[in-house]
Image (cartoon, rainbow, N blue to C red; front, side):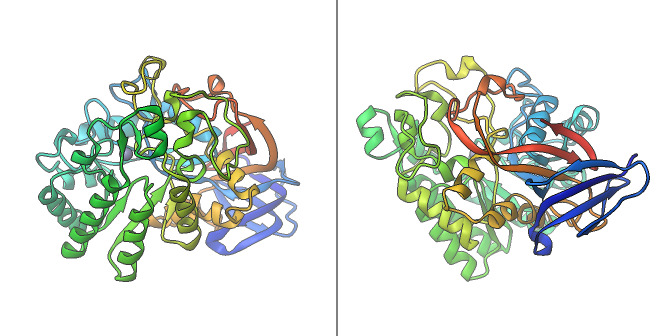
Length: 441
Ligand SMILES: [Zn+2]
């Protein structure tokens, strides 16, 4: 394998506290060194990164690759190509496939697909309960041995508190987190968007913040009791963030993630409006646009602001996409009937950089939350960093490139994006996985 030299870029690596213009040398698929000026060995491939940002490859703790069973929405091949285009070099695959990833056989199948067809690294997440049905724990030990990095019934909450108690206890023995989609079913039932003035105006049944907040509080209480690790998926409600803040002060083993859409959009997107303090200028979608239907729902402006502050001050641990591709059949229907979810991988960096350009988040914080923070959640020192010896997973960003989102041009099979037609500032130029080009413009 030929060595590669990335020359003259602004290297931002929060894992080492590096933010300076320098050269980066890659040999044998690993980072070999960073220095002011590296000449490189004979025959080195040179990438000119002047004016660009050189970051560790992004790590996404939460995406839906849909394979096996739902290949019409996405496959490991298309989902990981979309990930590479979005700057992600490692993605964690949620287990709500058909069959679900509640057995070693399905996990092995996904890992085999990833080895043969994947453009980036894939880490599987196993089910908490058999079939994600919430009734009986899955074989968590077997799933851990198969390589799962945690357990989740994402798409469904683990509604039964006693099942959650047992799961946290087993997870703790295995040293792995339980990742919960927190939403009390009785408060959610029939809801299609955030409960508030927008849902009232549109006549759509809303989901209150308390649907999330009550289950987050319950999970914190259970994790505190058994000493297990609870990770809150896609946090969206201000009160839930406050519950996590207080729990962290008591040293409960709780972490949480937020999506780019909950950081940049509000429930007004369901009316086709970008919302107060938008980082996008304007949206081209119209009222009742099902591309803005997502679970948890896009919340109010105060919630969005709370997510940004909590990400900056560390209460929210990292950014995850909750990439949820769907076919047009599932989205081109009434708002009530449409599937929940947004295709996020290819707009995530543009959304996050738009937030940086709007002065709402520092650049180094953004990169930390996409790289070293999720890597440290995984307990990994070979990804999310540009330390010598680490995997040469590198994302090169043009921070000032303005581009218009064309969902039809996504590499993902999911074209369901409320940002279709919006202008984002900041684009991925090149993504390297283990020193090999996984994507380049
Ligand atoms: Zn979820």
